Image (cartoon, rainbow, N blue to C red):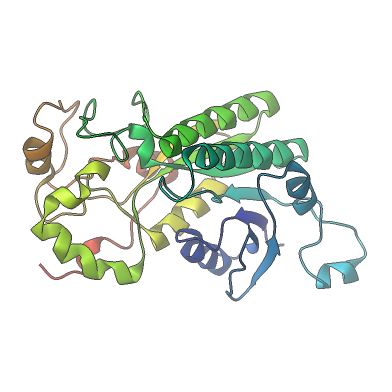
Length: 297
C-alpha cells in the first residue's frame, strides 16, 4: 500500500517540484495550500496553517471522493511534510512573517504528533546561519556551515526558523517521534540555471547565502530519504547540493568576501560552504542535478 503524505505548501517554489518527485516515488500526496497544485496524482485542500482547528480537520478528513467508497473512515497519514510559510522577509510586516511561520509550524507539528503521526519533516532555512538577511555586512562564525553551528539570525524570517527547530525538537522529545528539520539552501528551479553566468560574473550576488543552492528536484530526493529513514528522533540537516554555485574555488570566495572567517576542516576545491556532508553520510544523499549539467563554462 502506498504511503500517504500530507504536504503543506506544495504549491510554492520548492513544493511544486518536490511533490511531483514524491508522487513519482510512489507516495499518495495530499497538498494543503492556499492555492492548489495542478499536478497528476496530487489532491488539494485549501487551508490556513495558522488556524489550529483547520489543521486538525485537515489531518482527520478524507483526501478525495474515492475515499468515501471504502467505507473504512478516514485513513491516517504516514508522514507530514511542512513547507508552508511566508518565504522571506519584505513580503509581509515582520511580525506577521514571524507569527505565520511560527504558529503555522506549531499547529502542524502539534496536530500531527497528537494524532499519532510518527514522521514529520519541516522546512528550516540557510537563513538561520544569520547572514542572509543581516543588517549590513556580517561575517559567518566559521566555514563550512554545519548543523552544530551557533545559529543567530537578526531578522524575523530567520528567527522564525530557529524557533521552529526548537518547536520540532520539543515535540520529538515529548512524543518520541522523528522530526527532521531541513535547512534548505537557495532553491533553484530548472529554468533558473540560465542566471548562473550572471552569478559567475559577479560572485558578490550570492555571498549572503554562502553561494549555496539546492536543485528543487534534488530536494525531492532529500525529502524522500528523510521519510524513509526512521529512528533518528530530532535532527537538523542542511539541504544543499555538493558544490558552491560559482565557478570560483570555495576558498577563494571565502578569502575574497569573508577573509576573517576561519575554516574548521579541509574542504574540496568547489565544495559547498553550506555543507551537505551530514545528509550524504546519514541519509545517503547523492545529488543528481549539479549545476554543471546545465551551464556551460
